[in-house]
Length: 219
Image 1 (cartoon, rainbow, N blue to C red):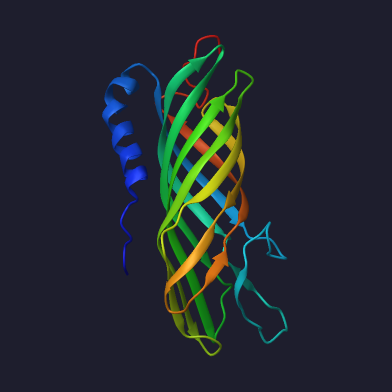
Image 2: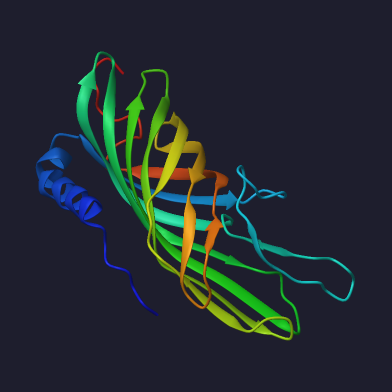
């Protein structure tokens, strides 16, 4: 499997956050998080949801779809309080994880889609328990593999930036979020062309080293 190089701008952000990490953690301004979520490509694809890339028909007539934007996402990261804005604050957050999608079990066909998302987000943390913002996302080692009676193929996609918009409700160390990702995949091996990988998602996060509400004064 070919691992794409980390884009320079994102690497700089990761290194800068790491350099500030130890002192910020001591001041309670750096918090870690683990998130489990799901992204959905939408039934009709198009601008809102990701394109349907593979479609199979089972013996009972059902057709499970493999859309470009869908998948289960497990990630970990950290949020650094960059600025205090009145009673709120501005967070810079980095997430790294794995996004995985497969089809329901079938005797004659398998298909899996694995990606490794890296995200850099800027979110405003309001004193009412909300964080709102967005940022840039990259999906590394982006590979779709199919094997069976219907399709036998391996398709790799180039690493290209996308946009993530997120709203999060915070409750002590737990948070619930909804997000929308705008992204296009460009085929690098096993085919040609581009694929719409937009998705809408939701997830739960657990925070450590402090609550998701952080340490902004007045909260």
